[in-house]
Image (spheres, rainbow, N blue to C red):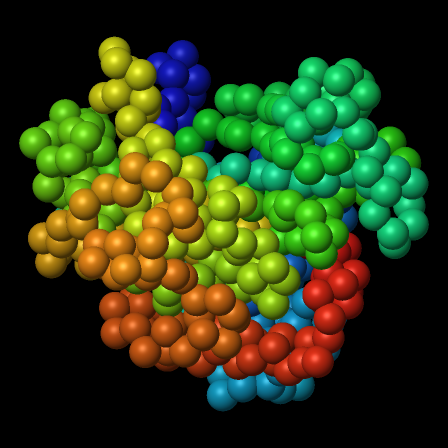
Length: 477
C-alpha cells in the first residue's frame, strides 16, 4: 500500500472532535456557505448526511442546500436509538442505547463533501455525531476511529488503510438472486457481460475523486470487486461507505440490484470486505525493510501480532452478522484460522510484501476474515487499538503458515498454535466482551451496545435455516 502520488493534493484530514465552541460553529457555517455556493453552481440541490449503525447499515438524514449552513453549525437531529437497530430495523435496547428518549446532532464533515456522480443533484458528507451540548457522542464510531488514529499519531505512527469492496449483481429488481453475469470466475467473459455497467461505476468514482486501483470479476457468478487507493484510517472508512453507495446507485440505475451481504446464496461464495493496513513512521513503511520475518520491522511485527492475537474478539466487530459465519468456511479463502503467512490467502492475516523494488511502498497486512456487514469506522478503530497494543507490548509473530491450515493434521495445527476462529457470532461476542485491550480502547458504551445488538441478531435468527438467514439478510447490506 503506497502513499498517494505526489501529483495528487491530499484530502483534508478530519478535524479533532472537541466540544463545539461558538467560534467553531461560526467557522463551520462560513465553510458551509462557501460550499453551498459551489454546489449550487453545479446543480446540487441536497446533501445526504450519513452514519453507519452498529449493525453495519448506512443510515441517512438529508438536507436541502439552503439548510447546509444550519446543519454544519448546529447539526441535524437524530435519535440515539439507531445505535441499537438490528439489520431488520427492529431494536435491541441496551444499557446505553435503544430507548425513545434523547437527541443527537449530525454534523456533516464538509472536508469530505462529495458531489454524487451516480445521484445527480445530490452531494454526500459523512456525519460526526454530537449531543446537544456539543460533546462528541460516545457511540459515534467515526469519532472513535479518529481517536484511535490520533493515539497512534501521538506515538509517532501513521496508518494507511483500504477496504476491498466485493458485491454481487442480480438481474432485475426482485428479491430472488439472479446472477447478472455468468461467465467463468475472474473471466473476461464476465467483464464483457457487464462492461458498460463497470465502466459507469469507474466513471462515477473518478468524478468523485476516488482513485481506483483495480476492478475485476470475482469467484461467484455475478460477483465483482473494486479496490481503491489507501487513505488515512477515517478516510478509508469514509471511502468504504462512498464506494458502496456509488456501486448501489449505478446498479439501480441500470435496472439491477447490488448486494454486499456476507452470503448471497447459502451454498455459494460470500462477499468479503478485506482490510489492508500498513504502519508508517516519518514517511517510512514499517511493514518492510526491517530485520523481522519477510522484512517486517519490530514495530510492524508488533502491530501485526497485536491484531492476530485479538482476532477472535475482533470478529464481533469485523464479522458481525449471523450470515458472516456462513461465509467463514475453510478452504474458501476466507481466513478461518488464526494464523498469518506471506501471500497465504487461507490465513486470516496475509502479509502482502509487494514485488522487489516496491516493497518500501507496497508492503501491508490484509485482514481476510472480515466482511462488509461491519461498520467500517468501528472495525478500523478496533484494528488500530489491537495493533497499538501489539506495538506497546513488543509482540512477536508465531511461525508463518505456508499452506492451507485446513489441510494440516489437527495435531500439527495444535503444535503450531493454529486455532480456528470462532465458528459462530455467539462465540465471537463472548471473546469480544472478555478482551481487556478492546474493552479499554472502545469503552463500555461501545462494548455493551455491540454485544447487545449482536445478541439481538442471534435471537432474531434463532432456529432459522441457512437459506432463511441468507434470504432475510441478502438485501440489507
